[in-house]
Image (cartoon, rainbow over all chains, first blue to last red; front, side):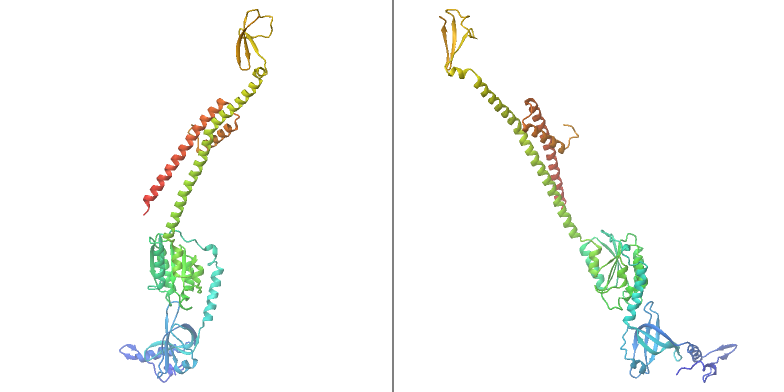
Length: 392
Length: 68
């Protein structure tokens, strides 16, 4: 079909301007054909993109689809001979990535530029994974995922940024989780695309806007589960770098437990689900109250207990103090009694009991008869009493 | 009692006095003096404990009143 470089001015269709006064004017058809011929000289190339808007009809000669650049959404119309397309049995659906081999073409009748595809190959998951692995190794080598880069989350966040899809269950889960646990939390939501070619750039923008807010303490990036391709924007290099260089700590809650988009590795903390992210980012106020109450109770009990033991010790000391002097006097008394007892044994009374008597004259003990005169009164003391006597 | 005396030092002194009195080695006059000193220390300690107790009760009631 299409005219090759051999056509053009020398070909069967003349592309010549018409004279209108002193101006040369091309007809639309002539212009289109001219450009078509020009474009047709461009080489055949491989192009990578995402299939969208696939249109195929049994009575059409060609199938049509649009190839979309997953990074920035640029589009390219593609036509391909239907027989060739069907022969490949690719079972393509919107969003599938392909490599298309073809030549640029201008459809002269409509002035539409597109790719005329000659062949089509599915660009598989394996290739994606390999590309992802390469990016992961590169960023890891830069130290972007290093453990020492991870920052601790604030204990009492005043303001929490949430980057999420506009009606995502993930958004609801994070918000509910935060508000249930910590009602005074202030959450600023930045809604953005979380899927498709614009997602990565949009998330980066949302993150930057949030981080410009004064007083922002932490950001949660939340997206529910999805296919491998759905989550690809969250492994985009720009997005991963933006998360790693965020001025505040970032919690990544993207996909399910088994998914590991690169943003999870760059974030300061990875949450397995949006609800888990809420748990990480705010304390449970109810639980805090309980702990505080327990601590207060313990404090009260501890203070009382220490007081009681001190009082018991003091009371005991006092009890001993109170008894001590009496005890001391008692002991002294006992010693005294003992001495008195011994004194008593040593007294002459025991001798008197054996029948001796003490004789006193003028209260002096009489030890010799020489001094006594006849008729003198003396005092005689025997064991059970005294009596008077006269000296003969 | 000196103003620097703490509960602990007073209690220590009181217990030493009790030990000396209980040993029975003290002269009677000295024992009486020690006893008086011991009683004084006891009153001091008790006063400290009473005021601590008062403070605890006061705090506890304030905490109760502040409960939502």
